[in-house]
Amino acid sequence: QLHMTDESHILMEEQVRQRVASAPSSAPKRRTLVFGTGSGLLARNLRRDLGDRLDLVENDLEPEIAMRNYRLALNVSSEEGSHQLMPGNIADLSAIPDDYFDLVVSHGTLRYFILQYGRQAVREIHRILKPGGTALIGNVPEPPKRRIIRPLVENLLTEEKIPWELKEQPL
Image 1 (cartoon, rainbow, N blue to C red):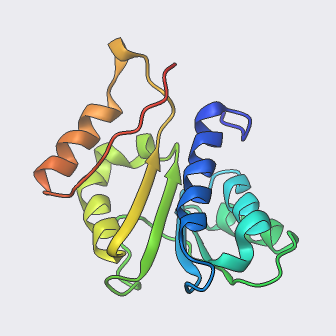
Image 2: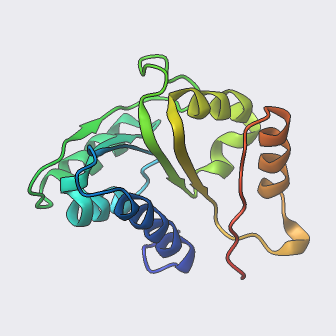
């Protein structure tokens, strides 16, 4: 089980911080979707540290998990910024308009959906991102000889002609 002390999770949180911090302070709040919220710690930390610069939406396939995390996140202090809950499947984000989010973030959930509905999920993420927006999709580090998820994602993004960049943390 992942915890925020895992280096890969810390790296993901730092990537989000850098992208939000790089926007001018006069810029509108960054609309951010965190999907596959798991423990909810990533969203709570982002709300605590960047809440005045984010409009945060949490998504999870399991409504109970999403609701628990949402309630916990509301207890985290934030001067401003909204925090919404959106239970549902990342492969069907039809309720969200095109070009809506500045940032889509997920860590460790890829392995749960890539085989079943990865192509549709990637298309949906691409559709809801604003032009110039960023999707940060992290995964639990895989040993080089047992890589399964990374090649699947690389092939999928290439086939869909979606620009991507790999940032990898050594094991």
